[in-house]
Each structure stands twice: as structure tokens, then as C-alpha cells.
Amino acid sequence: MSSPPYLQRRRQLASQLGPDAVAIVPTASEHLRNRDSEFLFRFDSYFHYLSGFGEPNAWLVITSDGHTTLFCQPKDLEREIWDGIRLGPEAAPVALGVDAAFAVTELEQRLPKLLENKATVWYPFATHQGLEGRIDGWLKSVRARARFGAQCPDTQRDLCSLLDEMRLIKDAHEQATMRRAAQISAGAHIRAMQLSARMLRQGEDVREYHLDAELLHEFRRHGSQYPAYGSIVAAGANACVLHYRADDAPIRDGELVLIDAGCELDGYASDITRTFPANGKFSGPQRALYDLVLASQNAATAATKPGARFTDPHEAAVKVLTQGMLDLGLLDRNQVGTLDDAIHHRHYFAHYMHRTSHWLGMDVHDCGSYVEPSELGEVSSRHDPLSGEVIQNRPSRILRPGMVLTLEPGLYVRPSDHIPREFWNIGIRIEDDAIVTGNGCELISRDVPVDADDIEALMRH
Ligand code: GLY
Ligand code: MN
Ligand code: MN
Image 1 (cartoon, rainbow, N blue to C red):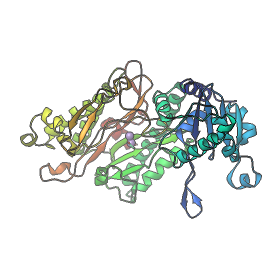
Image 2: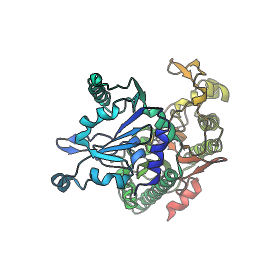
Image 3: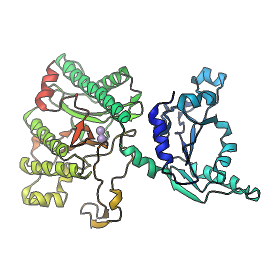
């Protein structure tokens, strides 16, 4: 039996292709890691969104009337002994609800036929290496049959533009999967926090990889296929390296630990960051910075609601963070001026250099335009004071129910003679996953506490 969301999504896509059109969607390629060992295969998100099919070497072809053809690996007893069971084209129509299925070895021969007498071919632009060349080859084959009256498509269009819009609004099936993914990840963060405090209490040598292993164990224990991205487990000053990866650095009593990790479940990512005291108790300066980041996240959360702009949570967070930087002496009022000056000239960039949000979905930095489509033409430009580049501003996306974004403000303090020493090398980020609802947003990752007192209480046990 086909799962209803895939059939429904293919129909929705087909209805937007226009007349006499064909859409071609390949899954991801397999990649060698070294010699003859491959990286773990991960399907292409667009392909899986439309098929629910996870095998490599597969293609979908969808026409304007919704007719869907799947090309997949043929049954092959010899290969299946080594690599695992294949669905095969005979079983695919019933299993996936596609109208026809053929062995992928027939792709070259059948694709030109599927393109013949069509006006438009859609495929994802600039996403699959070599795809443009293959489409070119199939179009050439169609053209070679012109003397038999075959018409060749004369328009190529980017399928991402349609699929990105569809994927931006998560349906009920997607939201349910994302809630579960976030719950699993929250549980993993709790385990990592508790392990850190327990090992330190017992006088053991705690390393970043101990906490990384705890996260992985909890992800897999609940059926997650893999982490949605490389987990960051950063002890002490390592937290100021934004893309630090869990390594073998010791986790010391008195330091903070920043963990940015989330599992992928059935194709959907979660993305959670917590920062906690390794031993379970914040110091005064750590707590002051932590509470500031949390206050900025609360402001961002309050700004996340339908009708607001995508940039509103960021602007709300920046305002709170920058005021806090002035109050705590991370920015010198005599040098940067007022709050408005510090924001306008982006002085806060010294300690907060990334955005507060990104779309979240099948990909951790999910697809979907950050510009409001109805206002695409309204361009203004400004000179960026930091990079010197001219930046073209277009109106930011208006939030609608079903969109999912992260809220992840942070503060990263590198040593500097202009900053109180007690704050040096502290890196803090707090990240939660928000589904935009009818009147606000739902934070789906809050099964792991975020309030400093609650984190301390959790780590005592
Ligand atoms: N973990 C990647 C991010 O937070 O964007
Ligand atoms: Mn994120
Ligand atoms: Mn993250």
C-alpha cells in the first residue's frame, strides 16, 4: 500500500507543472569513502519527499496528469546477497503507488520516449552532478526522431522552485515525524548532561567523545537512522569555534559544554543546542551570559508567529543580546555609542556572528526561499559596514502556519583586553525547533530543559 502523503504530493506537484510537461527527479548518488568502501547512503530529499523510497539508483518521472514512473534497481539475487533486498520494479507499483516501474537499466532507452511530444521538462537545477548532461542526451535522442514527427521539449525549468515551496510548509505527517525526532534528540541531550556531571563527580576523565557516544546511543536506540549533521560537542573555549566537531578534548570541572546535535528520523532533521556547566553548577559569570542568551531566545520565540517576517526573531534576539553586551561590558559604550548605533553598525557581530534561524525539515538547513515571493521585485541595497559589500535586500518571508524554523541565538566571547576576564572563552548557544502555528509557535524540542535552574536540577540526579 502506498503511504497517502507521497501520492498526494505527486498530485500536487503535477498540478503545477503546466500542460505537456514532464518532471524528472533522481535520488542521490552513492559515494566512495575510500578504496571500495562507500559512505552510508542517504537518499535525495526531493526524491524521498515524493516517493518515500530509500534505495539508491532510482528515478521518478512525473507527467502533468500525475502519471508517475519509477526506475529502480532490478531484482538480482547475486547483488541482494551482498547488498540487501531490493524492492524491484514488479513490486514497486503496489508498494509505492506509482503507475509504472522499470529497471533503471532501461532508463536510457525509455526516457526519450517519455520526453517525446512534451513541451517542458522540469528537473532540479544544479543539485545532481552530471544531470544536465544526461537530460541533454535524452533531448538529443528525441530530436533525432524529428523526421518521424517527434516533438522535442523546448523549455527547461527548475523543479526546485516548485518543490521548495511545497516543502516549506510541513504537512501533518511531516510535523509528527519532526516532533518525534526532536523528542529523541532532547532525550539524548539530557543523557549527555547527566553523564558529564556523573563522570566528573566520580573523578573520571571525561572527554568530548564520551558525550558524543551518549548522543549516538540515544539516537539509534530510538530508531533514528543517523545524526542529521555532524554533532558539535565543545568543551570550554572550543564552544567559540562555531563548527567544532566532537573530539578528544577533556571536559573540565568549572567549564561549560556546548552540544549542538540532533537526530534524523525517517528523513527529517532535528537541531538542538544546549550549553550547560560540565559539573552541573553555573558560575556567576557563566550564569549572567547564559541568562542573557536565554532572554534573547525568549524574545525571538515571542516574535515567531504567523504574519511576522522571517527576520523578526533575529532582530528581536539581536536587540536583547546587544543591550546585554552593553550592560555587561562586552561592548564599550564609549566606542560603540547607543544600542541603536551598536545594532546599526553591527558591533554585536564581535560576539554574535551568525543568524538566529534557518528553515528546518528534511535537510537541517532546509530548502525554501527566505524572500517573500509576492514582494520579490522590491529590492533595496545597502553598504555592509563590515564586509564592504553591497547587499541587496528583498522583503523577508512572511511566516505561515506549518513553516518550521530554528531559534538559536548565541554569544561567543574570545579573549580581549577590552572585555572583563571572567567572560573570556565562554561560548553559549541555545537552539530550539519551532513550528509556526495559528497564533504563535510550538517549540517541539523543549523536552530538554533550557532554564538554568532546571538544567542544574537535572544534572544533580
Ligand atoms: N547544527 C547546525 C545549525 O545549527 O545550523
Ligand atoms: Mn541550527
Ligand atoms: Mn544546531
